[in-house]
Image (cartoon, rainbow, N blue to C red; front, side, top):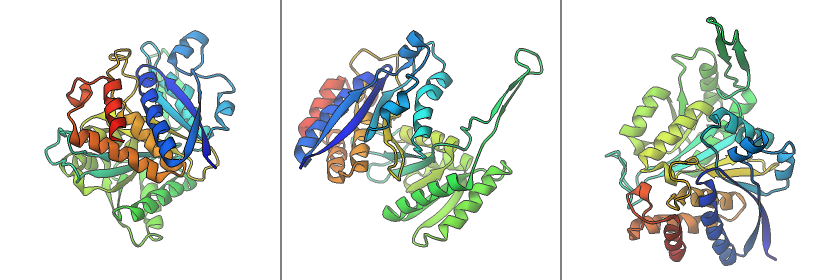
Length: 352
């Protein structure tokens, strides 16, 4: 019996609508090969919708997504719509309503891509950043007072809970035990007096349950430098919401292009759908030209297949990504080539 997965598509803005169709093409090829099918429902939720109707998605948007097995998102962002409006109007409500508390971002230096970092060599840099995705520095606690007056102030509170940090650490330590057995915790306890020592305390507590994992901790400023100077040193890096956000984009740049970077927003318990998305943004400067790099979306689709229980199909995709970069000179513009989105996708599917 063929398993069918219900996939909610949110193309979003800019190149989001250009990179999801290639991901669908790849998914359908793998479905035929591995004996599963995917049915897609597309939702026109975007900044353009916000400009038309005053909301990124309808009031019952979360309920519409609830029955999906997974969500595949393109990109969000549009000139004239502030980023905090687009983010808090769509992505963050989905992440929090579906308790997607793990943001997973793998980074590899592939053969055939020149990293701007001299020490980042193919086959040596293979890092996963495990980022807390629901609380931390990106809380809703705070506000603004005395707006418009000289003594105007803005207050933003970071919120770290024992339950929230512990469940993330357990995920990260488990992942490290399944990979290279090494974990690095990002902290800043020498400057942030309450939340970061609390984070460090919980890391120490949870590490005791994973004696097979060698771990250390690094202050975020030093860690950012070492991501550039010694990128091959790291295996699994666990970090709070803000630190993980910055580190994962830095690591993607070290790998050669943020255009290839994927992300998963996971509800590990599978009580709710998880969401998968490239991290390159909507790129309005190249939207509509057919030159967007589809690799971030395609790799995100591979992560989705792995989450849905098809690890062999997911490996087929990552193997094809490695092959198209190592064995051909087909590249999109961000990787120094001239291939269109469609040409790059066709070559990757050929290698599948």
